[in-house]
Length: 264
Image (cartoon, rainbow, N blue to C red; front, side, top):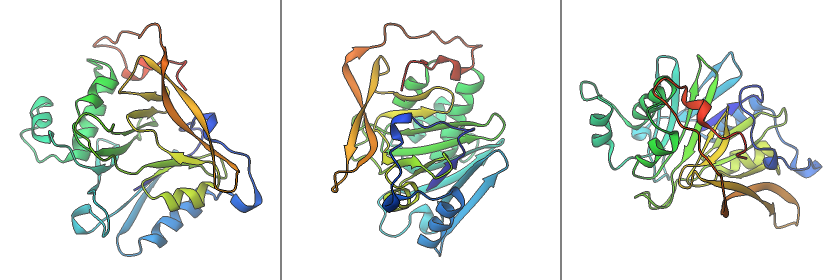
C-alpha cells in the first residue's frame, strides 16, 4: 500500500524532516508512485485525485501479495477511500455495531463507515473508535470531499499481536508519503523517513496522536542511521506528561475539532 498527500492536504510532523544530503536526495511524488508500480509489476494499481492525493495498492491473491502475512484491501464509498493492511478479529461484532448486516462488508469498508460516523455525528472521541478495532491493522483514509486524511496503526496490545509494518516520510516537494514498504519510503524520502508510531493516529487537521494513551503527549526521539546521519524522528508516548484536559465531543460536533492543537 502507498498513500501520497501534497503538503497543502496533510502536514507531517516537522520532526520527520531531516537535513537534505546528496546521498539521500528525496524523490518527487510521481517518481515514488512509479517506483511502487515497478516494485509490483503484476498487481499494483493506483488512483490520483485532483486535490493533491494518490493512493496505491497491490491486487491479486485475495489482496495478499506473495511474501506478506497481511491481506491488503482498497475500497471507496461516497467519495471516501481507504487502503487497509491486516485484519480485524472482531469484524462481525463491529458490523453489527455499525448496522451493516444488510450488505457485504470487509475491514476497509468498516473503517470508512467508522470514519464517516466520526465525521458526521461524532458520538465519542476518535481514540475510542480505534480502541474498538481488535487485531493487527494499518490504514489510510482519504476523504475526497473534505480533503481530510486519517491514518492509524494498531497497538501491540488490544489483541493485535504483531503490528503490521508502516513507514512514512517527506518527499522532495514536501508531500507526505505513507507505505508498508520500507524500501519505497526510504528511497523516496531519503533521510526524512521513519516508522509510523504504533498505537497512534494521524489526522490532517489535528496531527499525530496516540489513541492508546490519548491523555499523554508524544515526543520525538532523534534517529541516527548506521553512518551517524540524522534521520526522521521516532515518536513515542511521553508517560511523564499528560494533557490537562480533553475537549468534549457532542453529537453535533465535527470529530476533527476534538483533536488537541498542542499534540505533535
